[in-house]
Amino acid sequence: MVKTIKALPPIPEKLFFTISEASKLCGVKPHVLRYWEQEFSSLRPAKRRGGRRNYQRKDIEVIRKIRELLYQQGFTITGAKQQLHLDRSEEMVSLENTLEQEIPRVVERQQFVEQVIQPKAQIQQATVSHVQPTAVQNGNADKLINQMITELQELLISLKM
Image (cartoon, rainbow, N blue to C red; front, side):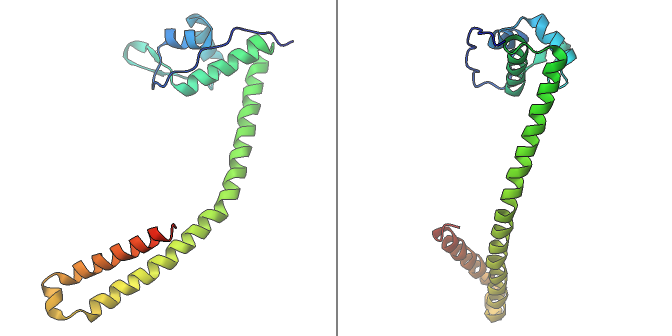
């Protein structure tokens, strides 16, 4: 029982929306939004002084999803809550799968960085031990170390780490 409803306007690139703006963007009246806030735990807009609501983009997206479930797909409030919960669960599983795929890449990058940093520390140590005492007293050792570090960084950039 899918109903066709007038297309909604695109969501503007703003940080916050008033309840009247959210109402227009989602095609529901303000009193409906206030009621949905009581019914759906995923819909919790921030409130300013005086209790005025500040809806963010994620709130607008949740409202549109609720509207679709209730008005287009014919869900009851309880059914819409369950569907939103299922959608969030599927989203979490998807995020976990993505994380599991990324962990080996992160570990590989970390090992590469450690391989680069360890020789850099050895170079710094060697530079300090081979610099004449007068150079150390004049502060030239720090300049040499910084120059070598800069050269190593440029080399890493050129290798397109």
